[in-house]
Image: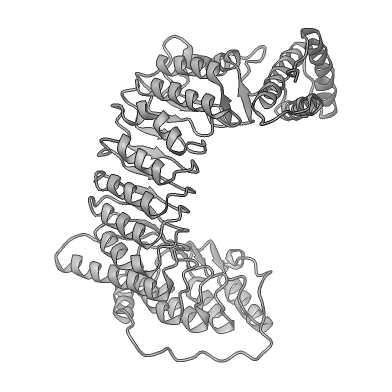
Length: 533
């Protein structure tokens, strides 16, 4: 099949028509552009659209009709013209007539914007600040630009030019639309260039279709001497084999402080490999291993890996089916993290027993730390949404909240099963918080009594920005009372929407007595919080 192309004459005709269109649209918008500016913009727009069409025609599986490619070219032209007019005649990555700047003063180059398939010439222009003599660029972000082999070669040369000062490299989402063999070559070239940056501390490879082949294509920078402190591999197809490759190539992760692994398919086996990596990363401060199909065995392995250090500040294991089996191991690991400030275990299948075990274990750890004169953590963010927290488990959560009365700012218990009794129990702890900012109790089978109790607990707090109670079962009278409580405290604006409230037809019961049983020291914790506040 004949390859799609346009003659130089046809392309020049398109550019001339674009000049007229740009000037006309700009005039309608009250913007007057010189013919010189419009001509530069038109040429740049046509070049971007033509490159995109060439790549689309070449990389699409099967035979794409020439007419379809032409329509895509036309659509891209239209999109870029409209965007250029919106931007006042400027084209992303193109120096316009009259524009000037000192390349030596630029420290950050960010290409993020429209999806463009770069040519070598376009890359040379976009990375001019890196290639300029004496460049001091220390941070680069190439996201949303698709690099082919020629463009990658130019980018590698630009990276080499600033390698002595480069500290942060974000090459996420840079191979979209490329055939696998070309994509892997691009990653090898960029990785090789980055391996020569002796001060590189942050590397982002997210949103590239890596898999094991892609991870190994980045061997040069992962296995090199760069003192990496932050590594992001989010949404990259991090399978068990890719996890193994990551752990293998990072021969010395002792400097790692931040590891971001979101939206992958690692499973328990992959988590075990990452756990091994964590066991060799005692300085870890921020780990995100969310939405990665990690079950109880993987959760337990990760918890054990975390025990290698005590520097953790943020932990996000959300959207993984950890179940209650992982709760004791998590409590043991997290109890030894005095710097922990943010804990996100939303949608982890802990269930009421797992939540109670986790909270109870943490509280025991706090008591032991205090008895031994050791510092303990002061949580600022707590996420236990979608974990079937019922009235009994709510006692454990309330005790944990009360234990952090001075520090806790955000509490997320969305889509649990608190009911009125659980909400009332939790409200006792919420009232003890010194400066709550966000409390999310959406979808908890809460009726008038529980909703009003929650409102009364936090409405008087000057720091409050949001109390979310939608998707509950509050009567019209309850809604009126709820709004009245918030308005009386001057916090009407902090009450979240209630459009999806599902009022029950039956008459509401009055507040019920709490069930007897372990209150996890809630009464004592509330007394201590009151004394401090």
